[in-house]
Each structure stands twice: as C-alpha cells, then as structure tokens.
Amino acid sequence: MPYETIWTGGDPVADYDAAYDNSGSVPDSAAFLPRWQADAAAFRGKLSSEGRADLSVPYGDRPRQHYDLFRPEGEVQGLVVFVHGGYWKAQEIGNWSHFSAGALSRGFAVALPEYTLCPEASVADITREIGRFLDHSAARIAGPIRLSGHSAGGHLVSRMLCTNAPIAAATADRIDHTVSISGVHDLRPIMRTAMNDVLGLDVAEALAESPALLEPRPGANLTCIVGGAELAEFRRQNALLANAWHGFGVVTRAAEIAGRHHFDVVDDLLDAESELVAILTQPPSR
Image 1 (tube, rainbow, N blue to C red):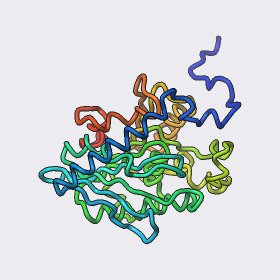
Image 2 (image 1 turned 180 degrees about the horizontal axis):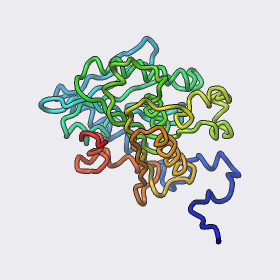
Image 3 (image 1 turned 60 degrees about the vertical axis):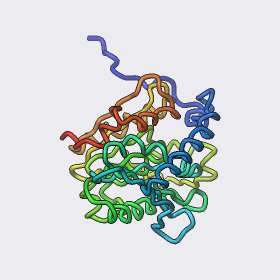
Image 4 (image 1 turned 60 degrees about the horizontal axis):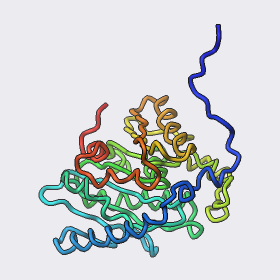
C-alpha cells in the first residue's frame, strides 16, 4: 500500500537569517513604521483629550518598565493586553497605541507594556518584566484578562500561560484567552541567526523560554494566528504551539489570514467587527 504524504516541511532551512527576516520579505516594509507612529500619536492625543488614557504608568524602576492604559467609554468589561514585537531588541509601545481601537470599542480597557530590550535584558528577564506588568495592570482593571502579542510579543503572551509563568496565581486565573499573532514559540532556531549576537540566547535559555517546549496551565485557551503570506518559519511556528499544547488537553486553535504578511497581519485589531477582535472580547469557547 503506498504511503500518503500528509505534510512535508519542504527543503531544510539553509539560511536562518533569511528565514526570520520579516523586513526583507515584505517589499514595502519600511513604510509601515512611519504610518504606525503617526496613527498612534493621533490616537493617544484623542484618548488623552477625552481623559481615557493613562500614559507611562510605571510597573518597576527601570526606564522602560511602564505601560499605557486606555479606557473605553462606559463600563469596563475587562482587560485586553497587547505586547509589541521587535525580536525582543527593538520597537516601543508608542508605535502601537491605535491597535487598541477594536477592543476599546467593545468595552475593554487595553494595556500596552514596554519592556527592557536586549542586550540590556535577557529574554528571561523580559519574561519576568511582562509577568510583573500583568500583575500590576490586573490590579487596576477588574474582569477577565485577554492577552495578545505580535511576533516576539506572541512569544511573551504565550509564555504567560506556562505552568512556571512569573505571574501571581490570581492573575493567571483571570486569563481566559490568549492570542499569539505571528508568534515565535520555539527559540532554538533564533540562536542560528545573526541577531543572536544581540539576544545572547544559549541552549539553556532557549529551552527554558520556549512555550512550545513547556507545559501550559490546565484550562488554558490559546489561539495562534499568522498571515498566509508570511515566511514559512512563522507559519510553522504558528501551527507548532497549537499542536504541541493540544496534547496537554487545553483548548488550542491555529489559523492563517489569507494574503496577510508580518506587518499587516495585525490590522484586524483596528476593526471592531473583525474576527480577531471578537476572539479577544467575547467569552472563549471551550
């Protein structure tokens, strides 16, 4: 009886730098940051003028240990978190403020944390900072907590679902859905890229900080989303975590948004009627 091929990974990765080079894979990638910065600044200005923005709220003593918190009009339904990416070594929350719009319009407060970047901090240090931020912001906003993050931010929010996540039990109990958008869930391939000169990952840290190699908390609910036009490694990493954690009996889902690449895959966060915003603001299915 002939074997039926149900999956093939294609050719082995020959160039890890190219395999994780999102900017190089999107022809107009340089145009996104200036547009994000302008839209985010206008958004912060509007929310500040309405008294609905708490900016640069400290959660620690280091310069980048702070977050922005935006409040909806009317009664707060809960807290949505968005953690930015940048391969743990770049980006800042001031570029992402406007991506709060969809969840805000559904009645959720939205918090965006800043964190110390590599090489000043290690990836493990950043994990601890995000845990500290979550405990701080959870104490300010009642209700369910929904986590989201993009790229390295997808790694960080997934890491918060692990049994050894550095967050208080009371905070963990309130996290009822997490969405990793184009997340990096196994850090070992990153060690083979030139960016590791900045990140400083070694085998021990890569193993300890890879959600796909760790155990999720019982009752975790995870959705992994990636663009259908993204690099093959990101599509693989997206499916990897949902597949691995499903084996622990938790609720997982992996989805691809057709035609989206690494820089426009987050656009649905702007749209209150999008499936992504619905996932973040509706009670999760079990």
